[in-house]
Length: 238
Image (cartoon, rainbow, N blue to C red; front, side, top):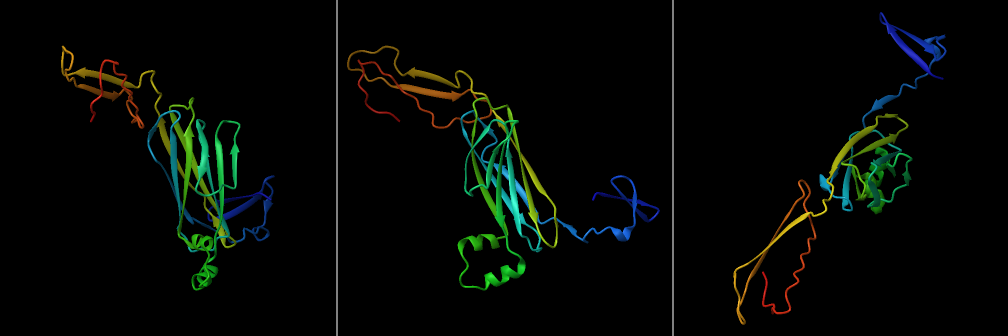
């Protein structure tokens, strides 16, 4: 049943979905309280990326309440333009949505305070149990930027929980990353020599400089290949 409660002059009028009135004694709300049991934060390994680059996200879930939890679920929706690669926790599901986004879901089993106290005093706490007793959970998500990714990528992470004691409030955070398009020539190269004229047996030095033409994103793994004339003998380089 769906009920609507309306306050007027200190009195509460309760109606059904069809607007018929219901006596207050006939409605059971369960006396459940709404508890904010989580805080969630998501960060990106870099704010500006290029198509084809790897982009890593870091999700941290902190548990802020002593209320007993049955489990909690972390749901991260990757924006269109990102491919899911891997995670340090195996997801329960990875769903490709019709709008091009990807929803990754993890479910974690947690322990109530009484069980946690019993396990903490035990000498045989397993690694998985010890993790469940921790006050925070960290998830690392590795993605790859698609060649046709839009200029801005915005994703949302949502944490929900279940408890027999209360209704757990949803926790949410959002992250945005910029995608810079790769120009046809992303690097400006310049080569100069220390001699204007040379002769057989002369030693000549070359200086090669380069600079990126990208405005926001730094280049990595840059390889410069020097194709020297067959009349020259390589001596050394710095």
